[in-house]
Amino acid sequence: MSPARQGTAAGPNKVCRDPAPGGRWRGAATARAMKVLIVEDELKVGQFIERALTEQSHTAHLVGSCAEARDALADSAYEAVILDLGLPDGDGLDLLREWRGAGFNEPVLILSARDAVNDRIRGLNHGADDYLAKPFSLEELLARIRALLRRQGGAKSTQLTHGDIRMDLLARSVTAAGQPVELTNREFALLELFLQNRGRVLTRTMIAERIWEASYEMETNLIDVYVRRLRKKLGATEERPLIRTLRGTGYQLT
Image 1: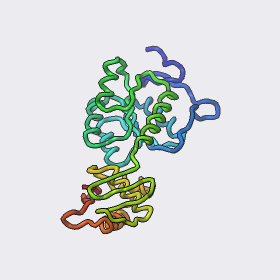
Image 2: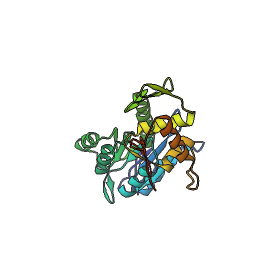
Image 3: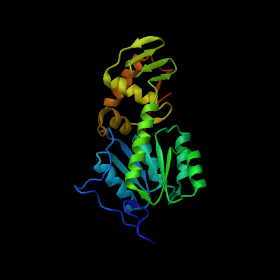
Image 4: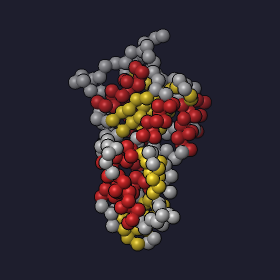
């Protein structure tokens, strides 16, 4: 097996170059920190990517199987996913199709040794936003992730709706049944999170990380209090709760 070219990563036995002088990876930083899930069973490659993202002030979480990836995405919210295809317990394409079918719309970049044109087409047709073959340039990978996030940010609508609920992100206003609803900043952020994930179960950990930027402590009922406030302000009833409580799991906008 030939050594990897400078600035690339290809597999567990291939060598990746060290960071640029000064100890940090070269390349433009993103405008804001992001949270990325790395699904890669080759530990050295995954740790290489994880280290590079962390050194650019991002949060990166590395898992090595389909099962671990499912658990990670169920427990927390991610702004992008780097997905290998040849995983020990399944095919990454099946995992991607499953996520898209469940309503997961964040950018997914496939990173795979399958480099044939047909493989790339199949990956994109299954819902990938980009496809990068191994061996790869780390700086190119980071640049592609930045580009995906820029496009994702520009594509997001400024109007969110669900039934008779309307949210204007630019005006920061909310109406329910045509009537204005006064919300605090946290309540607005929480409702926005639910509207962006209609029908998806949001765990308490996911909500705490997105709204409070902190880990959720099980002994606190802070999230429950805010959910009850939202229900009341939006005119929810027992017959139409709007936000379902799934005991032991989290909440779901219905």
